[in-house]
Length: 578
Ligand code: NAP
Image 1 (cartoon, rainbow, N blue to C red):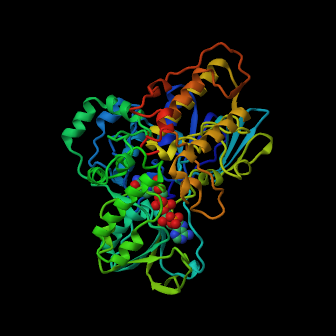
Image 2 (image 1 turned 90 degrees about the vertical axis):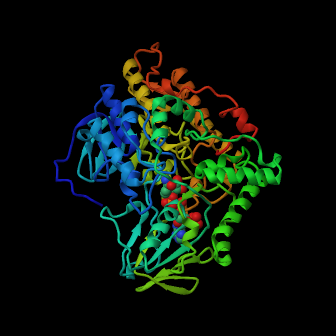
């Protein structure tokens, strides 16, 4: 987008680690490795830090986890000094925060911007990775750390006739830095996921007409976003560690009050009252109204009915309301959080077009055709999402031992041990990779936990003189099986979401994130480390009796009990939001 960096000489250096990506994961990984005395180079495709928050500049973009929790916890000074202005910070503020972190920890000097990694190849003889970029860099490193982001490879469907359409076509995930003025334009939006739901109300304020093309109706809960109360912020900061500890113990890695009782044990009046109460709190915590909502279809039907009634109470035209009412499992696809989404459809210049049966037929010189009808448009916004979790890996030619391409290994779906490593790819770490809680947890916390684990692991390898680390096939297979097994317990595995890769034709259908809950996962990672990297082979280690370092990972130890989450709670299907 902003590729404005001055030309530079290609690099041929060697490092301890190459980190791919300078989003929240890559930044913290760099900081941590430097603190431990390692050399690291970060390559970043964008012109600045921030990852998702660098690219997704569409109107209305903001986080849907409270900013006081959607932020780094590793530095108390940082969390004390940064002031959030709103409950859910808007994208420019989150990007400013990322820039502040980069400045504060002097990260930029080790990041090469406007540089995409094109190739990463493992040299088994040297036990090192060779990494190449589109700027001609060719560097080697013992460790290659993929900090690619779970939702960063934009899904840009090639609709027939697109080249004929003379107007601009934007993707929400690659929004122009200078912003877009839709004033007086006939605008089309394709898609009704989170990005669309955040941007549609704002685009409608500028556009002359707005036509929304909906393939699947989405559930969305009001954010009730507001200015962050200074007194509340002060109280949190007075004991920030307490909030962070409570958050770490939650299945999602972020804290909000929830109820573990089953919806089906409550009376219809009791449920109505409970749903109203949680609706008035708004956002993702709405799913915490009962413990069984994502496990029992009958329980889920009660919340889905409530949400549909809400839609019908807001949208005045009953036909439009019907179209906006999803008929699938509530919360099966990632729940959206909005400000004035349904109200947007009460405006006379906004039209909803159902494309469930035919999809977008084609673009023309004057607009878009769906259901045999042409809609005249000046500009189109594709809010069509991402090739989630594995799409960003597919963009790099990653080759492991014996010349094995990662794309080949993951042909039938990603296979990892703990979402951190994969057999055949020694010394390659994935931050929030498939098979870890990642997108089902508060991502900043998931990132920090992974970075801490990886950093401790690399430091331990230095302590014992190990040259490489790789999981065993048996342990990887067992983990993949466990990830799949746990997914089957949740209703979330039942619909065609991006969690299972079903948003893009031809992708294997596998539930990619680990749904067993953040603390359960964290404890498993800790156990693996405490047991001397159980399930891994550390090659070339001279010193075998050195106990594993748990310097950074220590803070992630979480007591498991029924009040938070435990395997027993999961088996009893009383864990809200997994
Ligand atoms: P998304 O949830 O995948 O939504 C994409 C939308 O485009 C869906 O409505 C999809 O329909 C539609 N679509 C995709 N391909 C299409 C095609 N070929 N023809 C017509 N329609 C098509 O993507 P997103 O809205 O960018 O959100 C992705 C994820 O990013 C979210 O789930 C969330 O995790 C994260 N996110 C978070 C926030 C936030 O609130 N902080 C904001 C934005 C994104 P189908 O449903 O039928 O596939």
